[in-house]
Length: 272
Length: 315
Ligand SMILES: Cc1cc2nc3c(=O)[nH]c(=O)nc-3n(C[C@H](O)[C@H](O)[C@H](O)COP(=O)(O)OP(=O)(O)OC[C@H]3O[C@@H](n4cnc5c(N)ncnc54)[C@H](O)[C@@H]3O)c2cc1C
Ligand SMILES: Nc1ncnc2c1ncn2[C@@H]1O[C@H](COP(=O)(O)O)[C@@H](O)[C@H]1O
Image (cartoon, each protein chain N blue to C red):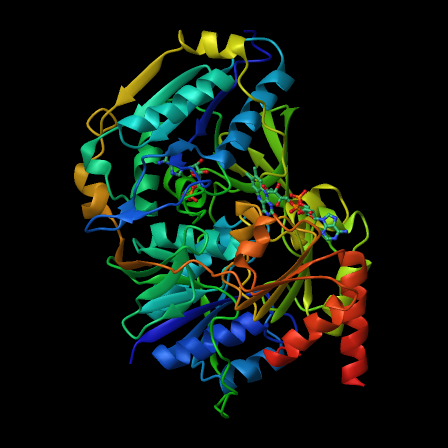
């Protein structure tokens, strides 16, 4: 590490979520997510890839990518996967009191972990967790940590300014594409447009076994149990009903008139 | 009566359809008041009055617009306090959800996103897990902040009403914020927006580079054009047309899927549509499992025939 290019410290937030390829369930009195078939959230792989690419673009060494997860014991698997892909170390916040946290509780807990990690240049998250799908956490983290928010980035670039590193990102919505600039540290979320996540290779899988994983409790990060979990939640799920799956309707094979038959169907349904 | 604060972002000359839905909903739940970011034109003032909005709050501080999300969130939170709002309603765009998220922290209030209905006690109905569960959720702390999906409320034509009082809100400019340093407007298609459209016609890899048949059918039906990620990734159509987990979630009256296999991430964005039609060459395509009307065939012939037939019947 040299003066001009101090190591880049990135925390990537990775969530352990139920695999979307299987049926997913809400369980128990409080309708919490059933997590038996869980994986590293697909969308967080883009966040990890973005972190690794930023570090690689910096060149030199002394950079650190820390994969952080919050969740029950099995959630450490999300961190392990991130280590296999290329993160340098892992942090797992695991505490019984966390069960049933809503977005605000999750954000308070993750903000406390980030503070606990100390000098961090960037916190990078996915655009949404594939289970909760609220996209609330990144914005709430920025508010809690009093850091600039650079969210839904579809490109990211670090440049060197006189005063230190600066971040430039592209952010797209329906009708406008924005260029966003920020000083560091910052909270960043990335979309699935930003890159093509790499897979773990054999070398990475072997190397991951030697990488450190720190397990933290709420006491370790100085957060009171009343701030998280069901007690600390500001929202509550009162009822949850599985929707009957859509049933298959009519399927026809085109015999030269399927377009017209489609219009007949639309007319019957009063959709014309 | 409960005071319900509706957040409206940069309306331009007229309110957007989603703004009208939120105002209608706020009027049903209590007395609507408005936090308006951006310029307030005469037409919008009149319309807000007609919807019964008593007060329109506007930031008295400039320069918030350049601060990504942070500025708007600080304004909304300040307006909610000044109004002493019992609840806050916003639209459901990515940015609106982020504004809600930060205002929630500032107001120590719970946030519920993706609502499709809001009850008198401000409990919200939404679906989760790609539409496979229906959930009722309540805010238990603070002023309920709820983002409501487009097409969830039947707009009521407003009944008269007097022009709203305009009240400036002092906002402390957030010091930690990213700056928007460039904006480029995308070309408008002239079609209804995906969120708001009652009909969506989507094309996938099967259109093989030519969205013409999809666009023509959408136009014949007065609908919006959507796409699978395979089609947007290929660059055949703008990313903003993507329907699915990482694109738009749509719940139109009619969704026509053409040349799309029906992967779980695509289904996540469209399976709450009222009626689903699928056109696909492959009889085993998973999209047929959720289609009300499926056609095994070539979209390049089926779609144009349907378009022509609709035009004929309409003329
Ligand atoms: C993290 C992540 C997020 C994702 N998010 C989304 C998302 O938001 N939205 C989304 O759509 N996908 C998303 N995907 C991608 C998704 O998994 C699928 O790869 C994608 O939906 C496939 O698009 P497709 O159906 O157009 O292409 P394919 O799966 O290749 O299917 C093309 C279909 O067209 C049919 N076809 C071909 N020619 C014709 C013809 N002439 N006439 C009729 N039918 C024809 C074929 O039989 C086939 O069924 C995501 C993936 C990941 C990993
Ligand atoms: N329990 C968690 N552990 C680690 N990261 C999380 C957790 N929950 C949310 N995140 C991060 O926040 C992003 C957005 O999540 P959400 O706001 O839940 O949609 C995810 O993509 C993750 O990067």
